[in-house]
Figure 1 (cartoon, rainbow, N blue to C red):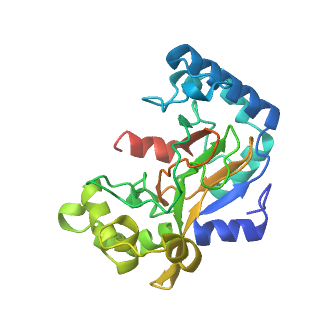
Figure 2 (cartoon, rainbow, N blue to C red):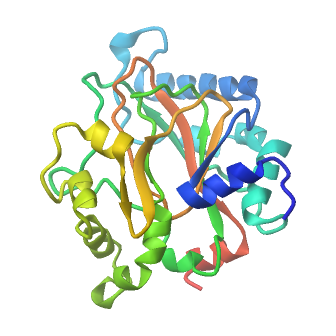
Length: 276
């Protein structure tokens, strides 16, 4: 397949690590206009003012107006189309009606660290069943940066290479009662290897989580895994494999995280979503 936007090394990286960064996927000015609209929605609904940090509280839910706004068609650029064509194939997907959740994550203070599951909440997970992609990907997981997201500022954390590990362990993950039970699959995965158990909280955590999980990583079944925190500038996009293991991260920075997060695919994805 001839590449339209991504280089061969970027496509190879995507298949190895499960993600690729597309800088300047859509216009920075359009991202800035979306952010302005999101601030207005936050002000109208919650009284949260851009220039008054004393009003900054975490909204109770995603931005509904931002999710459905027609402004999101500005993401429909030739560069975005070319990058997704490179991964899924031209004609194998359609522009989404919505680019997924419209997420605003406000600063919470503290010192950032690699997230771990706490109090029974399974933070580390994957959104798309492995079975849907056994015959090849039917979607990509798109993170669209409406605002700048600096390190430690709430960018989603992913486990690079985890999509390949899930495929390697597919038969075991979907064995018995786990066949159609997402929570049971995640529980099994979290305990399947000491590194994963320590990452997720199923086993005691190392003292230096950044070093162990982000710098050193681990090799399991010949697949190198490490935690990567996603960040970027307005108009950037990160495309991930639909089964990448990921979690929300705390925003310990100084500015809210504004992002769109959603799956992009075609007829195969639509059939799966309908249960076909």
